[in-house]
Length: 274
Image 1: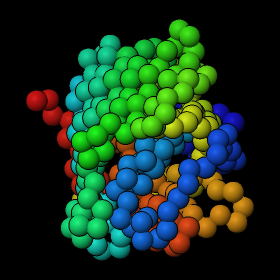
Image 2: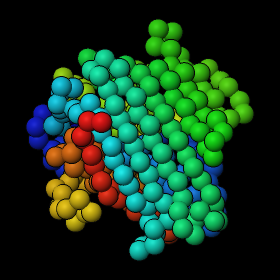
Image 3: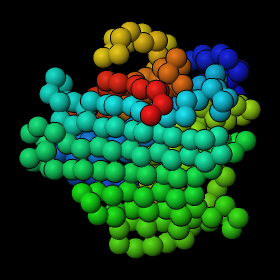
Image 4: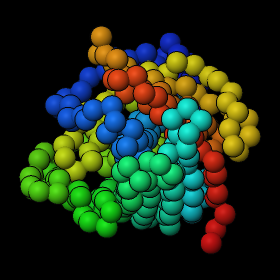
């Protein structure tokens, strides 16, 4: 399947989910609530995979030199965290810093200050990361060094370091969401490899349809994308992408196995230069 350029349809984007890696271990429902911001940060990066199946791709020249996005994380009406991304590029290189932290009651139960940074190059095929780091509460938690010449990546998960094969079309979770605004000559694809410093996984998604959402930045026309789950799975992952905002996500909904639902919603998108 390849969606036609300039057209996004549900039928053109139906695909099956495959995961070529063991699933990470999860905690109990209480820990899931406490770690909501961390979960949201992880999956918000993964949700960007849907950009692979959105056909309207912008040229690098059309992408602002600086994009700042603010998010609100909640369970129902209760706010439990917030996030902020700053993406910068000069047409040749890029840097993206993603910060997340718990707030309110969640910050007492599980104080979390998460900072992720990806640095790399802007190429004709899109963004190509060179390094990725994750700091958690001021300490280095994960790191990835990409060696595209040797086609291998060095992964550090906080305790151990391993060298693994580096497939083409691999991104760290922080840079991936911004990649396809730059891949102007690349058709929509079905899959991509993502790494968070622990492993490299292959993901696939499907488009549900078009929806207009009420958001903190006003009504936004979106494309609803869903990660397809294995039969019998009780978890779910949905996101809503706004083509008018460079195909960036304005809402993400994560349902845990225990039934708890987390919403990750945009409250601000700023493209002004500073």
